[in-house]
Image (tube, rainbow, N blue to C red):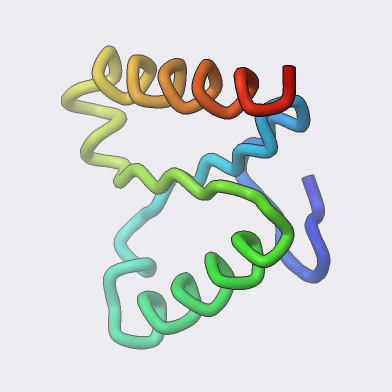
Length: 80
């Protein structure tokens, strides 16, 4: 999904939730700065951003899914 000039890894429109899966490039000084700027723009659009490392996905996928599910439930209750 393209949001402004950014490509979101995953986007849930109903929950206004962006999910980002971060590889190693996101943990450099430049990557962190770029991600922080991008996240602020997303927040200004009333979008919540959840970030997970590739390691989180590989080692604790169930917890990642539970976190996403909780965020969706919370954010969709705000719009109902």
